[in-house]
Length: 416
Ligand code: AMP
Image (cartoon, rainbow, N blue to C red; front, top):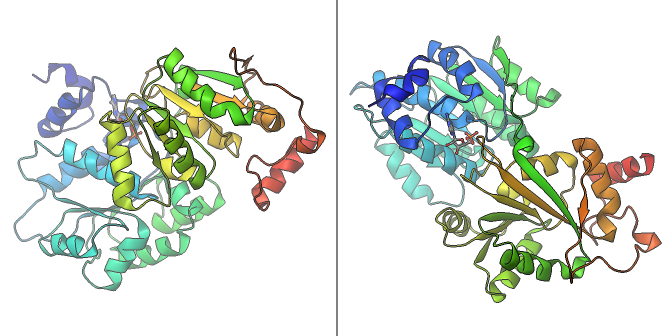
């Protein structure tokens, strides 16, 4: 039954995990899995430079499940592994992967997700019954440590997933506190898309001598993505979107906007136009966010309108289309957004709307992303009028006080 999975087997995975891999329909390990699985199974500390979409969740999920299941004894009731993630969505996604891949283990491995916005009593009750793997965001985890309802003094594995984002979201102090609370005798797996100084500092604190691995993606995700740019006046974007949804039969798209309010407003507007849409942003409660995400995954809605922060780390299988309704703030965000589609070898399309006020900023994005994209216009929605002088180089988010990033960007625009 598992004859097609020789490549996975060669990496050292057990039959129970292979069965779950087969059920997932995977036929070949991704490059990060080839490189890291044997080392992780050997017990090495690793510092891995890898992006979302590379198959990194499986890299730590499979060995953790395999090792913890193999060493389970009735006396051992302590938490074995801690996986820290920057966002609640990513935590839920990682737990989902652990449940899925752990399905066929003969010695079951229990997993608890500890995130804000969900019942602390429920989490405490589950902990009392014994848990093998905790997947958590730093804030709520510290609450529970503070209340002494969980101890991480005996963990054997620490995984930091998307470490750069954990720090970007301002969790440095929390991370530090967590590190003080965990066992020192453990295997460390550190995943980050980028390694600026602050990430390296934390990495040094976590492991004295990790092996550094950089995953060269032979097939960079953006190469699988058709990037389209459509010029349109700002006020016409909603109508244009609806027109294209009907005309080009768009379905299953993540639509990016620049603020929480814009996310709610656009989703409402689309709904009024008869489009099945929902929103995901930081002003929604956790159950509301979970519902929006599951409605989208279950195809109950076709369009999910999101802010960058809310969309961070969300993995949605087979996303065919990403729409930049508002421009992202930075070229890195642009790549991050469009990288939501065209994953794991699939083709994807990214459509960006730009108006007069976006021209300069988009040129900067193109320059940094090293692309030069053709501008399209759609009949009936042509870009009209002229860019008022005052608007050139203006902020993409109107009426906001300039942040450091905005100022730096303006300066960069002037220099180009
Ligand atoms: P991640 O980088 O962990 O967010 O994974 C991105 C997507 O790739 C997820 O939907 C995984 O289920 C999927 N994936 C992971 N490993 C493989 C594999 N070996 N073959 C095909 N898809 C995979």
